[in-house]
Length: 97
Image (cartoon, rainbow, N blue to C red; front, side, top):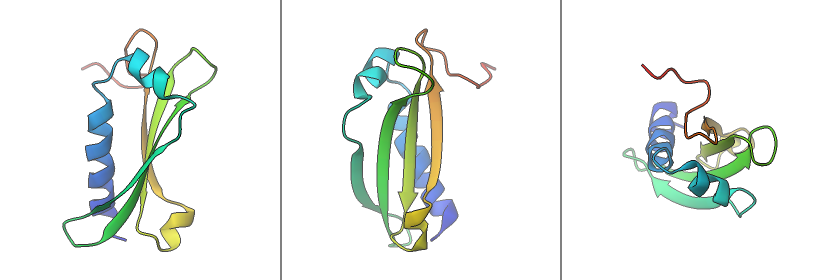
């Protein structure tokens, strides 16, 4: 798997969800994950999953988690990235600079 390509796919998917409000993200918790396949610039096919879950407790921050793998051994340990949005709309653990 091309790690750079997979990370770019993950980053693109995360960027779609970052503008959502806390309320929109929290409504996604406990719903089926969003799964799809996409083709990278190299022609490789990647399986992508998007999950929303409570980070610590219900009603608290929401973690949006995106994973990608190419169906090979990485399917057992896909690449992933996350962000966490607090109820006040801020991003947890990120500088506001």
